Length: 373
Image (spheres, rainbow, N blue to C red):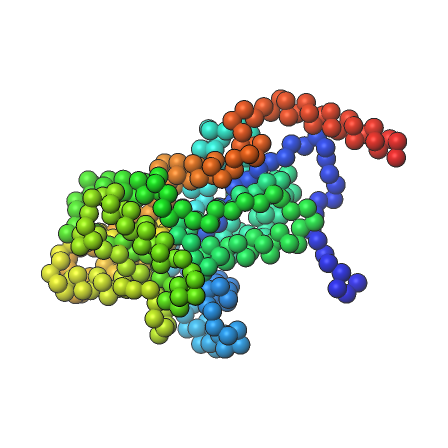
């Protein structure tokens, strides 16, 4: 019937199956292969998101489909091919390892039925498919944790959109909580600082430390996006944790596109200026990325390293993201346990046997009611 809502749901309800809770980690996403054919639909979905590009839709569609998607897929595919591994996309491989690490960590710290799942905002596994699969497996409480330390409408905001779009189609949505950001989380800052010190201990220390964050257009910040402030706070706290001055630890913004003014200073211009000023070695860290990806491995460690050398510098030493390291897993584990307080599956005294007994009694009551119906 035209106009009739179509809600998804389970065919039946079982009284003796224990409810589960889940943590949904969400990262940006990746094409399925480093080819223009695979990159094109990924870019179309990503750049077609109105949260990412805030232009009039009719105008942006003309630009996107008439120009960008005719040229950029081949260029992006070449960039992806430079960092692609035998296992696949670095972002996907690293995100899967992080999800597995968090699953093990929560299993070590809690005994309740807790799942950790991974979804991508663009590409696969899709948020909608993952949430529906979790529902089919008995998940009744869901914590969404976007893997973006600093909040922006262009990143975390788009994840919340996709989650809401999915939830509103479900006949019986799960209880829902979200984590918007963790840019100033003390354990996160400590983990970053420790990773930098470990890099210095192994590879030596450069003359400058550059903290490079992903950029967004300045007008988004003027319209109320807190991203610029979050990046500043992370940079300041990390600088303090390392005992560095502003002159010793700089920060910048990378990955700008188009002619519009983005957050600055720009990373590519900064590394060129440092090289031209006689700085021989710099260390670069990307505190806005949870897992290494195209923007860190190709743009920073390759492209910007070349810019630095061309300007007169010698070595740009890239410091990897926290990835699936134990410190990062512990940071996310602490975040999850704090944000899931009150949910029975996360209780320290969760008793599987007691829950099974209670559910068996519930099932028996349901049978009795059904027999009298």
